[in-house]
Image (cartoon, rainbow, N blue to C red):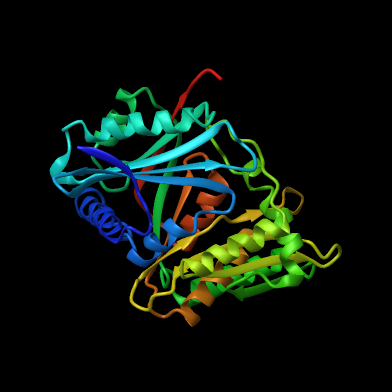
Length: 341
């Protein structure tokens, strides 16, 4: 077996890596959204502007048997690295995954990272049963559970029209005239980039992170636009709705949904929903998510479901999602291993 850093220009290895992802999905969690080939291929060539990425494949007899993806923040949190490992179901329990863990640790430690994470799917009460193999594998290699998230799915028409309208009107009443609701599809309008960068900078300070040692990072207009460039290169459409405070002109609440630019792929992904701490209690999160799902239905009729995950302790957002009809599918865990600097 040979472990090779994946070159995005190597079409055979890239195809082999994607085939491993597809095979694992069919066995491990077929109810979840399938891997999307075009997005995967484009993502190899267009890494996130605020992360350094690397991908490795384990090759045996000329065939890709497993895939390792590594990400490392490059603006802040320079102690941190994350990774995922996928081994073809027909080639597990042969030491391939362990070899990729060794590759990951050596690669990240060689670049000064002292907190490394691996993630895996897990079961959750009320959801589907998932194998414990990933959790046991991570623990065997010294990684301890640091954060659990619950994975939920919501049909775009989960609520009947009358129920949805009643929820919208109650949320609008709670928000009052203090806020202006603005929506768009695609890039953030230029006049909103600065204020959107400000609220994006609060995300790591506000969302539950469990035992992960992550510090808030500052998002500026340049980074915001660079992320938009990447989304376009990867063929991702963003459906976004925000609340702008009329008194200050600042965006104080935000939600978005990511959609593949593919008229046949039926699944979309809920991005972060966040409300500025000084503007909570006005049902802004619920308001924006209802407006946004309506935009999804109107503009992308092929989308049948939106997927989201929330930390198991994020009760306010979980309550909103349950109200909107999100149902538990499974869960995931971020497992952390820390090293001396």
